[in-house]
Length: 96
Length: 310
Length: 90
Image 1 (cartoon, rainbow over the protein chains, first blue to last red):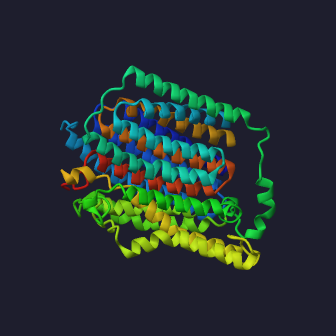
Image 2: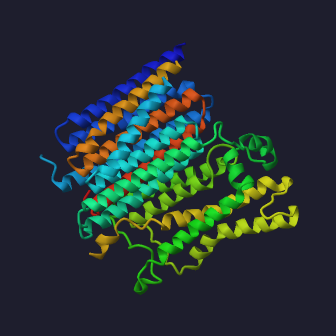
Image 3: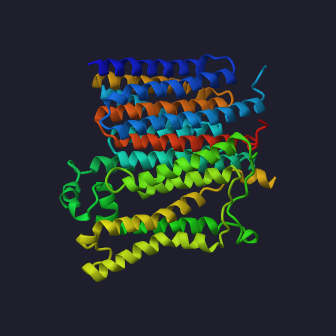
């Protein structure tokens, strides 16, 4: 019962972060701010969903793999964000 | 609730497909195609076709995406083509509509319930020693198809090679890439491949008993190799390289040798004696892994080709 | 519980789908890429939730492949748009 509550609260928070990421991606005025909003959904949205789902899994190995998926997305997301930011600066869509 | 999820995914899928076909900006269409591949993987998960989902996620979203990006780059610097005339458009629409109608007619003409060998597979899977029915079908019940598929992939690579200009033969495939060795691309190209290697071999090994297998694993390994090449940390081998050619034929040769052993032991080509079925299936998979990895990677030229020439 | 999980999966899918407006409108290539990346992360989350609903642990392996290969596609995309990126001055 308590574990169900855990899942409900954390997965809901994950959904909220995905929503925040999308709203930011659509509404923020310049590309760098939009990139910043996107990383929230990538890191926190997926992370909260993963942590929320952990009690639903049967084995420790599955849980570890799921956390690993999140870590992998964070690693590649962080590197990709750097490259995209570089791209934005090159393309001139950047006003300091 | 499942119906909602399915319909949302379906509508999104059709919308993205329309965008890929109708989009005017090539790179935007490619971005849509990558998104389409990821979404198709999700739909296969919803259909509980986990093996297909893995293949779609690896091939559709990842490798084909990289291939299309390379194509888009080349198109960007190519001379613009003349706009389509009304006649061409009418023919294109007519052929497309006729094709759709034929496909629809074929689907509607399928017998209901569809003929299925699933119960036969389920009844005989124990004899193969593997627990993943997909692997059992691909490498035991219908292994001839899989052998021919591997040969077709090899022929495709030879076809691509034969398009190379004479002057460049026997050169390296694609153009050497460069990137700042201290840049973030070089960083991720150093960090990600070891992780990808572990995941690839895990998927390969898991393929005997759960979804996974050589094809998905080969795609992952090929993608990691391409990442290293695109960051300038490694080079593509020259086409004359002995180890490259040996790797390319290792899979089909290993497969055929196992088939020949089948002639000796069971009297049928590719027949697997029940006592050794699993080790033989694993042998075929191990032989095919390097071949598929090399073919999949080398079919996709590095995306920097044109710029390096300029 | 199943209903809640499927509902959240549906919500995430719809939300990231709305984000695809950036894919249509751009304006820059970077914006299109960001929309695709959001869809990639979102569909990974939806997959994991769905895997928990149908109790099929192999779905996590699919998510693993999606995470790895979408990173590869993203890097290839950046390289494709701008060959100088990754050279970087940082």
